[in-house]
Length: 469
Image (cartoon, rainbow, N blue to C red):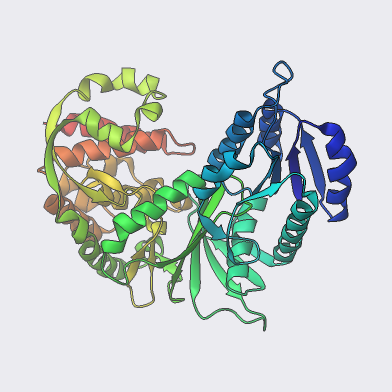
């Protein structure tokens, strides 16, 4: 266990605390005297547990210990390393200062699989009680580190693995087989996890675990409760729990679903048009629960583009903005339907059962957006998603005629799928401008990603501008 102690009395730490921490088997013991130096160390080291004396100085230039500085550091840890357990040591003058801070904390699944608070408070004069607490935490951490993880197609950090191990511990599993499901461009890891029981046999159900920065998982969790939970039963996996203990700024949310979801939408799109149409029919029915509440807004092309390709990305496209006069084009106004959209509905985010039932995964991008965004993503992700870039070899003529349905259908390798998606688009969208502006915005966003096929993205943008009437 890597422990950071923040304590202004270095002699007391070296003489009293450090030998005790060595005695409980701490791997690395770090000590900082100041708020500023503690922040720097947290930025550069993986810390499992923080021990904080509440009265600490700000820095070498401001050496007077102050309780408010200790509370400031505690707040920084909660905001930026919210999964890191924190033991606050108090003197007689500082015990009341932490009451409200501790009362505001929620319980979470800890290393032993039980629900606990990540913040503990002990009087500094009772250092033996503090060491006993750390000793127990060290034993719990060592126990979950013994859980073996077998990885397929994914690179996991130490904190990613810790999320998985806590999930295992909470379900009395001794190992986990993990494979990647997303293969996309985001910071998230979307994993299929098969737990192994104490007899060495797999669990009868499968798990989907998404790991990302804590604030992004919090958005995912809120989206599930606000939007996904209202879709038809069976169209989404059920939430098991969330895991953050000891994972610094990382967090995981875990779902369960039947084991027969071994393929995704892309698998069927590349192999069987008939099966793909069945999946799309069922997917359309699922998403109609969002689209039936669409509202019409008077907006600009820029508003749609900002929704799909935010300004901080758009501003990096200086050359194409000047070349095609995008700033002028974006000032045009239109009517568009808005409703809740998945907003990242590429093929890997649609798992499909053996009997062709789709379920949606990955809810971090769900939002109010143009009502054709999900259809546009289904249409275009097959040409842009990294997992397919070496499989699909698109003809540039297809994108030159993207908005000419008669020509487009003759060029498409899957004309019935293309016709289905265009009909779905027409039912959701407000006439044609919304669709054109959404395709334009999607293609712009793709240009901000490394590895994008620049030729087809640029051609789509040019075709959108020339087709807009």
